[in-house]
Amino acid sequence: MRSFRSLFALAPGVVLAFAAATQTANANVVYNYTGNDFTIVSAPFTTSDFVSASFTFANPLPADLPFTEESPALIAWSMSDQIYTVGSSNATLDDASFMTNQSGAITLWRFDSIGPNLTIFSSNESVAFDDETYLTNPANGNTYNVDTPGTWTATFNGFQGGTSSSPLPLIEGPLVAG
Picture 1: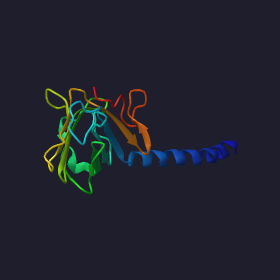
Picture 2 (picture 1 turned 30 degrees about the horizontal axis):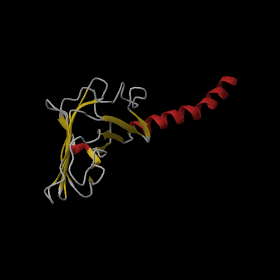
Picture 3 (picture 1 turned 60 degrees about the vertical axis):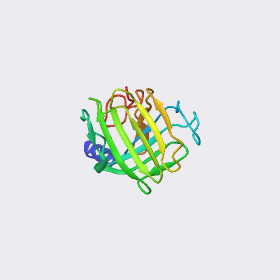
Picture 4 (picture 1 turned 90 degrees about the vertical axis):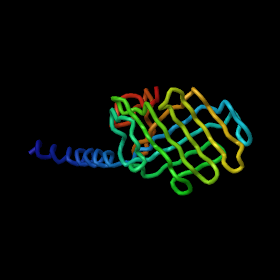
C-alpha cells in the first residue's frame, strides 16, 4: 500500500517535469549581438555608439551549422546603431547568415538591414570584421568599427544565457563569438 501511495506522491512532480521539458523544447530562442563602440564616426554618431541586433527563432540554431542564410527561419528581428532602430515592422532584412561550432555557438555571421534612409551591417565572415551604419539620406553620417567584433548571447524560454559561464539550455558550451 505504501509503494502505491509513494507512486501517487511522485506523479505530480513527474508531470510537471514533463510539461516543463515540453514547453522548453518549443520555446523561442533570441540571439542578441552587442558590438563594440564605433571607432570611425561622422555626425550624428559618436564613438559611444555601436551596432546591436536581436534575432528570434522558434528553435536554437543547430550545432555545426555551415554558413547559412537563416532569414526564412526568423520570427522577428531588430537592429540598432544606438541612434536609429530598424526591425521586422519598418525595414527589410537583406541578410541574416550564421555559422555555428560544435556547441551551437555563433562563430561567423553577416547581417544587414535596409531601412528608410539607412543600412545597418555587421560581418565577420571575411578576412576583416566590420560593424557599420550608412545613412543614405542625407548622404553623410557613416560610421564604422573595424576588426573588433562584438559578442553574442542568447535568451531561451525567457532566461538569459549563452556566455561561457552560463550556456544556453539545449546548446552546450559558450555562445560568445571567438
